[in-house]
Length: 370
Image (cartoon, rainbow, N blue to C red; front, side):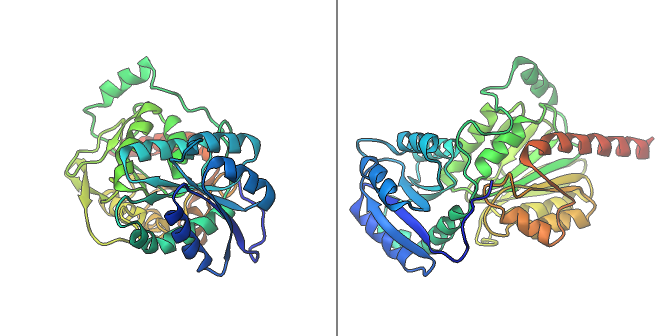
C-alpha cells in the first residue's frame, strides 16, 4: 500500500515522548530539515490523542515506554481507529527489541533506536536517519494488524518439525538470499511462513540494530516451519534452516567444497548499513553462481539493488517485491530501475513462486548430472 500525499508539501510530524529533553532534541533535528514541519509535541498518549484530532499530522514518532498508556496500547488503538504512519522510538535493549517488533507487527512503519547514554549527542548523530525515516514514513503504506494477505502460524506444526529434523543434517544445494529494511520484519515473517520445512538454506539481511537481531530471529522461528537462528561465523548453511545477519555484522556466504558457510565481519558500512544487503547478495553471487535465488523486499534507500543485479548477471533468478504490497518501495524500486529484478511480485505470491523456481532448478540440475 502506498500513502497518497503530494511530494511538495511539508511532512507534518507530531512527536510523542515522555522525556522533555528527547522532545526538544527531536524537534530541533526535524525542524532543521526544510521538508518537515513539527506541528506539536505530546508528553503522553492521552495528550497525543487530542493533538492528533486538532493537528492532523502526517507522521507520528512514538516512544515505546510512556506513563499512563504505553506505546503498544496507544498504537493498537490508533491502528484500529485511525491508521497512520508511525515511527517508533525504542531503547536498545532486548525488552525494547521485543516491544518494537510487536509494534511493527501492529502496523508501525519503522523504528529509531533510543540509546541510554549521551542521549543528546547520539540523537544528533542519528539526525540523517531520523529525518530520512520520517520522510519515508509519510509516503509509506500503512498496514493495520489483521491485513496480512496470508496468515502467519503461531508455531510450526508437528509434521513441519519432523521435516526440520530430517533436513537438520542436509547440505543445501542452493541458497535463498533475502534482503529488506523498513517494513521488512513483517514482510520476511510472512514470506518465511509460506516456505516448507525442507526449503533450501536461507540467508537474511534485515537492517536492524545488534540488540534486535536475536529476538527477531526467535520471532521468525516461532512462525516458520524452517529453523531460524541468528547467524554465527563459520556456521554451515543447511537445508530447512534460515540465518539472520547479526545487527552489527555483514553476513557473507562462502563455499567450501560442497558446503556453504556463513561468514561474519565488522567491515565498513556499505550504503550506510552494517549489515548490508549488497554485501550479502554479492557474496552469494560469487559463491553460488546460478545456484541461488535473490529476493529484495520492502525498504528505504537503495541497499541491495546492485547486489541483486550481480546475482542476476551470475544467472540466478531474482525477485523484487512490488510497490503495492511494499511498506516502502525504495530498495525494491531501485532494483527494478537498474534491471536487477527478473520478477516483480506482490508479497503474498513470492513464497509459492520461490518454491516453483526451486523445483525447476532442482530438475535442471538432476538432468545435467544424469
